[in-house]
Structure formats: structure tokens, C-alpha cells
View (cartoon, rainbow, N blue to C red):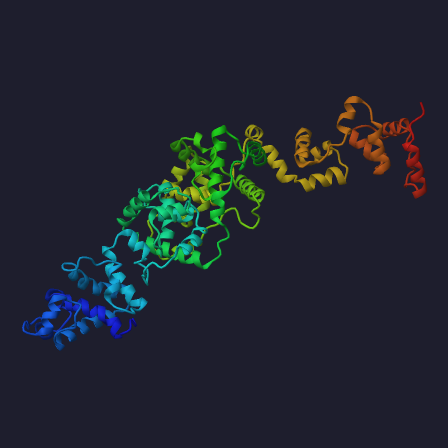
Length: 559
């Protein structure tokens, strides 16, 4: 490791060595140098001056200088910053007895023009004695610890890239088993991204991100995390993420998302429509509020309980229902809810952002983190498990040996397909219409009904869906229902306007119209005669004859 060996860089190390006791350094030097270094020379003026300010004055003898430089070089020659820090640590501890403070700020006086590498060695040496917040600010477990340098502007810029609630895919990985509840951990982890490299206080870090936690909460969580053996890798993961956010253009402005008005997110009629479209049971009002709150958190990055309507939900009930909903959600429902969120953002004049975003999980590679990894879950097996028992999420977590939050996240990202319903269940849940919508999309319906002029009864026979269902589906698609055929058999008559449009304007044949209305060709011909429509000859008429027939048909029949 090239730490440099200029006087200004070696000086703080020699100061430490001069202050060290015999017990501290005898293992670092040959015995004869050690003995000579500690031999008393009380009459020396330099010795008396050195005694007044031990560690800060020039060594009184050449052997002391040699001892100090030898120990300093022992630190400088270590292969990396952290091993060098370990070698320096005993020397620092020796200073604590007589120096009132050895801290991140006090090491500034240990020499001028220190290189970033030697500063990193100082921080690595101090790391075990630092508070969790200082370890975080200086990213002490990272390969190159450094003093915080971010300005207020840097902090504000980074805050725009961070949701108030930490990304779920990261929260799951950083949550200790049986430890801090993810709802408490998520806003603290978000605030930690502002603490890294910054001088911002805990309270200000929370305020930058919407004030969903506070300084006391941040301090308590950090203390609990620091007691875990995963703490060093947790800091490393957060430091990697902070660097990534600074280096890329995050596609979402979370500061703007925090300020939007969410009172019109997923209104009641849209929820009902989505349920009909996806074959989802709407449930009572509680489920609707739950889904709206979850969608709010996904879009805003704020806690679900700050949603406009969440106040009517009990927190314990909310957590239980949220886990249950993760198993109930289908790919079709997830797609529609995501589309609804995109529509909401467009209404807020946000057209250039995705509904949600997350940093790459690869930033956590090769780290020993406390939480479960959702990427290790067997998704097909998970889908089988959640469709088979009463408490599917908890049961699946136990069977798969992972956490409930990891299962919830996996189901949120890859919902389990719904089981094929029974006939009665399909009818009760709107699954029949959902199937009809899948097999007969608007484009196909339009082609059959408007372009090919097929009747609803013919389409029903072709598809196997009831004419009543097709009528409702046409209304949903905005396709106008023709006045006529489905009612004419009941009335025993053919209306003049309908026959004019079909026979004269669209030039459909009498046999075709007869099949649509369920009557014979002869009967349809009689209705044409009744309404004074000249019959076209077989093989079609000339253009002039067709125009004359149209003109005569538009004339009212004789009274």
C-alpha cells in the first residue's frame, strides 16, 4: 500500500510512536532499540521539552527518532487501509490516557497535508471507538474511509433521489431476523443515505425526506443495528448505494412525489371497474382502503398510513390484511393497478417517470446482510403454496425458510396466477367477463360486430358467451348496439330504418339478414316489399341501378 512517506505524512505516526509505552511497542522493535529508546536522559533539555508535550515535540535522541520511524513504517507497509488501521490502533489507545480526546475531529491536528489514504488509516484505526453515526458518516468499513464532505446542496440533491420509505427490495435485505420491524427500519435506512458523507443532523435528515421519522428514532435503530455482526456490511451496502445515486440520473423525483395531492388516487368507481376487469372480488370497504393505501405508498414513497384515507384502518389489521392481499393479488390485478397509477401521474402532469423504481440489487453482492434474499425464493413453488392454505404468506415463509416480508415482496413483483374458478365462483367474481375480455378484446369484438355485421347471437354462438354478457361487454368497450335483430323476433317485425341501413347502405344480402334475425329469406323479402325497398337482382345491380334503388327506398312507402 502506497501511503507516501513524506515528512508531513509520517509526522503523525511518529507522534503516536513517541507517545507509546514500552508495553505498546516492544513487540514492534528489536529489544536493544526498545531498551535504548526508553532509557532515561533527564538532563537533556530536549528530553524535558518532550516530556512537557509528549508525542508533539521532536525526539530528544536519534534512537527515539529511529524507533518512531520504524513503527511508522510498520503501519505504512501494511497491504491495505484496514490492516494499517489495526496496527495503529494500539498506539492510539495509548494516547487516550493523557489526551482528553481522540476523535474524528481531533485527528485533523495530527499533521498537515495528509493524503486521503493516511486519513483513511486514521479513521480505520478509530472505527471501533466511534459512535454508529460516525461510522456511517465516515463509511469506516469501506475500502477507503473518508471524512464527511457533502454540503447542504449535495444533501438536498441526493434527497430528491430517495423515497421517504426505503426501497422494499433493500429494506428486506437489511432487516435483521426478529429485529426491527420493517416499517420502522425503512425511513431510517432512507435517512442514512443522507448521513453518509454528510454533516446533516438526524432531525434534518428526517426532515429532508418528509419527516416520517425523527432523530430519536434514527438513533435508536442505528444503535440496534450496530449491535448486529452484519453492521459493517450494512454500512458498506448503504455507502455503495449512496455512490450509485450520486452517479446516476434516478428516473423519479421523490421530492415532487412527496408533495402531490393523492386524494384522487384510485377512486371508488375505478376500483370497482378494475375488479370487474380482472375478476377480483372487491371485498368490503376495508380491502379498497388497503389497496389504495398500498398504491399510495408505491407511488409517493411515503408510509401507507399517511395516505388520505388510511386513518380508518387499524395498524395491526392493516399489516395482516396487507400480507393476505399479497397472496390474493393476481398478475392481471397488479397490471391494472400499475396502469391506474400511471394514469394518476399523467393527471398530475408527470409523463416522464415510471410508477416505481429501485436501485440494482447487485450493489449488495458479496455482502453478509441480515435479511432474507427474495431472489433465492423458488417462485413456482411459492405460487403453489399461496393458493393452498388459509394463511398463505406465513405458511410459505415457513416452508421456504425465508421471511414474511421477502414473500410479500416476491408476490408483489411476481403475483401468483389465480386458480381456475368453479362455474358459480366465476360468475360471482366476474371471472366470466374477465375471460370474455381476454378471449374477445375490443378489436376482435369491433371486427365481428361492426365490420362483419354479425349479430350478438351469432357472436355468442361463435364464442360460447351469453348474448347478455356480450351486450354488457359492448357497452364497456363503447361499441354502440344496433337497434334491431335481438328484439325483432320478439316483436315479429323489422323496422324500416334498420333494414334500410343493412340492405341498402351496407348492401347486405337478404339471406344474410334473414339468418341474423332468425327468419326465412322469403319473410325478409316481404319486409323489404312492405318498406318499399326495391330488391336487387341476383349477381348485384349496376351502379346507376343501385343509386335509383336507394333513391326510391328513401321515399316513404305509399299510404
